[in-house]
Length: 255
Image 1 (cartoon, one colour):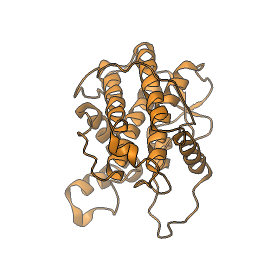
Image 2: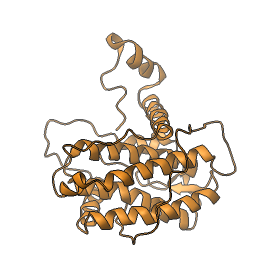
Image 3: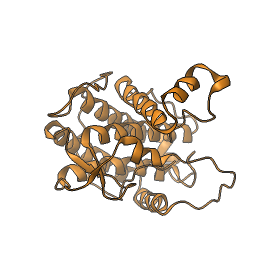
Image 4: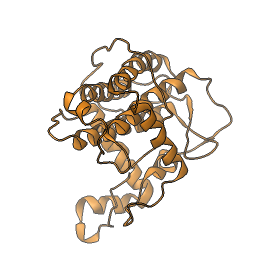
């Protein structure tokens, strides 16, 4: 269940500021200009939620144990989630790409859906394997270093998002030569943070964590519905919610 990628990173510790907001909904009606306060806060709140999980003694104790995600250790899953934040910071500080083909979220992020297989040893695609190797390598630096990288990148990303144009082009990995807007890309980052944070909680026996922030969850649910509609169509998604006898198997699973 490895998704749109995050290259390896290791960063020094910095100050962690408090949550920027609680339960602020993603607003699809905001267009142009900068990102809305709600869009930024939903992302930052998810980062801070993950940061809290990474500081738990129960997780640190299980760092080298297998996670609930195939082929990942607990530490590798934590590092993969943190690399996504570091990667967003890097994309916001790099020169904006030009000349790329715009794609819809379903066209690139929908490719991260992994079909269930009987053979657990089935080979990974090259990108997923490289992301996992990078994450496990980063995890080997230890939980304190990984959490410190999250702290530093979090503080940098907050300032960058406050001044970034919502329409800024962001190159995507899964589709060569393609881009999405920062507004759309940020929604996928919220989903990644929450899903992988939940992966970590479910990987560590006895770890009790609060639910993800309401505003972050709202972004995730809207994102999942959009991905499901992109994959099976609106009617099939509706039937999966309302009529089990007519629902396509797995219609609502998007990752």
